Image 1: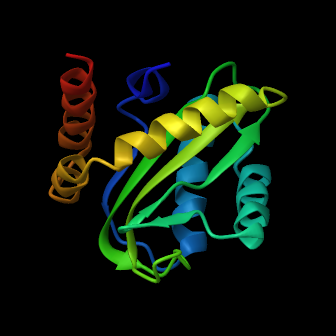
Image 2 (image 1 turned 90 degrees about the vertical axis):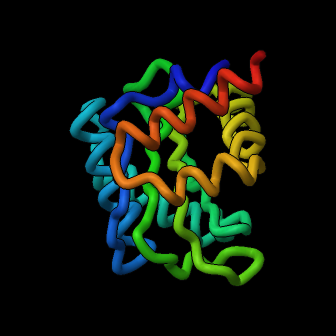
Image 3 (image 1 turned 135 degrees about the vertical axis):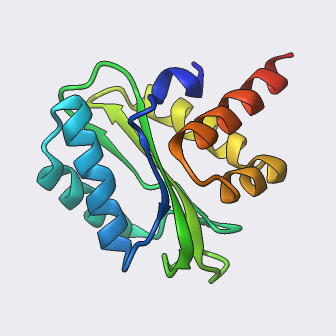
Length: 154
């Protein structure tokens, strides 16, 4: 499993000005709908329900909202890099400015957990997150992630 296979150049919101957690989740679900014919309203409801169980803000300005999703055959990742930090009720009470939305196929919980662990490990790399925060467009964000994955594999 490789994060590059879960992304596309249409998976990003870069330098995005979010007004709320719901706003950024709504925009990410619209990206999912546009690219993979996923019902954005149902997905948004699932993500909000998941957030009520406990915030997916994991600390250090990072959130990894996630949900199972019908109509996809492999995990998908959508990335928002915010222009300003946003209250996400993170466990360290810090604002979030990097959000990786993970969608996994329905009824494949082990694949969901593997993908979640992969994204989590990737985002522990402080050099990567610092570079992502400096990105001003999709191309640079995708390149930063690709380079980090290639360096790790080498």
